[in-house]
Length: 267
Image (cartoon, rainbow, N blue to C red):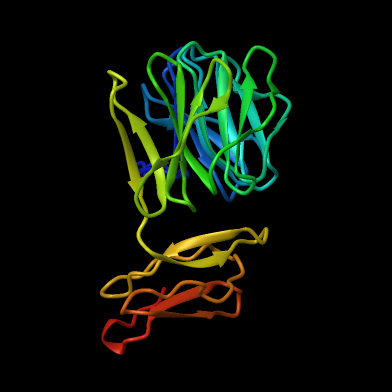
């Protein structure tokens, strides 16, 4: 599962990545371009951009390496890409704001976390058709599947829980308490331990689609970069000592600075 990742040195593309095992290729989701860039890992050179849905964010590749699945939270779809030809197939309709995705080890099912509809959509990779939505916690985001393929674990950002899903029946088990705003999740190779990444307390914004986004509110000696060109609404959470304020320039871009002048900076 990829929700965003590290910046790739010297390759001018955005950072959500999936990798193909059939050909030496990495696939990168470009949020603002609505494309995916294939990168040859043998030469570290990018190929031609592949058009996908609006606001692509996460990518998962099937174990046989034949298909890359790309979630697009701007139009609530998943786009399958044939890695042999780098051609996209018909978009698959899923829930609202699909952000996380993982494929079972047998390659038969892709599970998509739909953050705004509080569901997970299973997709049959044989037919690229979605199954009935599975109700999980509030704000599902990260998703990971055990090595034996029996259980998918879903991190629910807004109610601080993790939901286990039995893949044989697509039924959910009792929720598991996690820390504040769990985002990412990974499972050890032996399948015995789940690791979760949690978010700091934050302010809330809305993106250009009117969907709520969150931004770190750590003003002391640092600032967080806003969504480029996205409208902002009032902070909905102010829990830290160092609060922040925002301006908008003539281009509609938001500039974020700390309230305390000793730490004031803008970009």
